[in-house]
Image 1 (cartoon, one colour):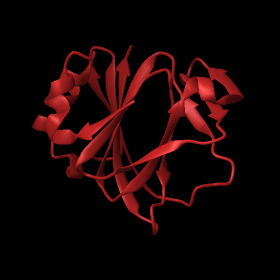
Image 2: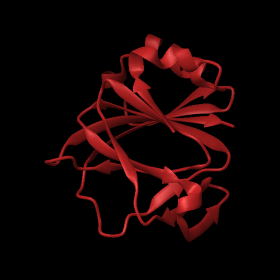
Image 3: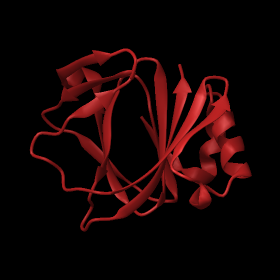
Image 4: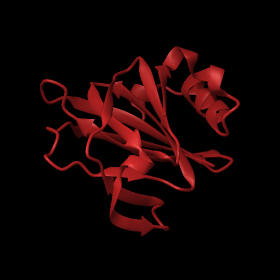
Length: 149
């Protein structure tokens, strides 16, 4: 996983699809985007969503993808983003090819706070889940870019 400041995102343009993300961010008012799916071309999409964060459950299900990288950024609010290496997880829900997702449990995980200044880029070997409350519930607006591997 890579976590860095949004202002440094263009440093990662060697990763397929990142230049499309930078182009999208530079040409849109992200706070004004409606919830939904936006096609960026070249097998890249942006999913815009809003939700209230929730407390971390006792047993966390972390997801993984095989065909797409996730580049996740919060544009309003804050959340805790949990992650762990896939080989440290235990399969919990089998791979769904249509949705490109499988779920794992992990005995422990690491975390990073996502807010409007940073992003998390997760690879197929990274388990991850967001939407977790930091100290108090937060109304989050988030962009999840799906980048074809």
